[in-house]
Image 1 (cartoon, rainbow, N blue to C red):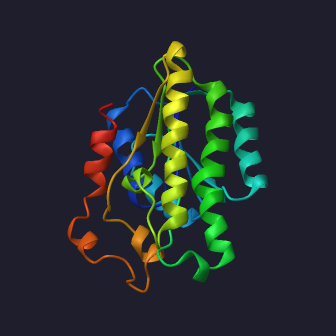
Image 2: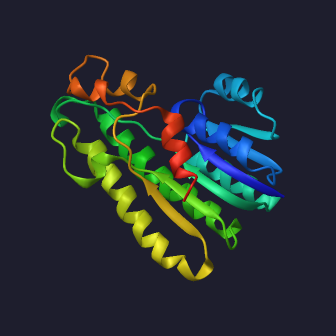
Amino acid sequence: MNIAIITGASSGIGAEFVMQISKKHSNLDEIWIIARRIDKLEELSNQLRTKTKIMSLDLALDHDLSLLSDELAKFQPNVQILVNCAGYGKIGPFSLGSYEEEIGMININCKALTAVTYFVLPYMNESARIIQIASAAAFLPQPNFAVYAASKSYVLSFSRALKYELHNRKINVIAICPGPVDTEFFEKADPDNQGKQYKKIFRVKPENVVAKALKY
């Protein structure tokens, strides 16, 4: 069974990856779409021509990560594409953020991405692709966005190293590093409009980001 797996699939870049992969990859038997909001996943699934497996998981929880591992072991799929989109950011001084949100960024942006990649990799063969969603924030420390930027630096570094390791297996790994994207991200990241306002002007459409990512 040939499949693609997309985390963070309920909205934004993740949902756009699901849509475009469904349209462009007719050889897939199924797309596994993963997020917490099952209503959004069901709504997305109804728009697709490709069969989907809806997995309502909170990837911050070890229990839910284990459920993904169990499903992979049960079905033994050939994973042709993995897209790790799950993640979030919070704008504001680190010392004023809540413990749950600051540590949660590390758990989702770093730990969950690493765990999902680890669990999925044994089911990938030659010509498979791993697409990790990093950020332009990965390249420099960002005061008032400290944990998010650091977490995306991890994603970029991890992806570069993994690409080298998997070269002989002919599995391609890329880290996507967009600037501000016009999604729900900023509704959670900056509900009080603390961020730089010029970023609103330069937000790009998620469909453009995804189209470019799928060319590699």
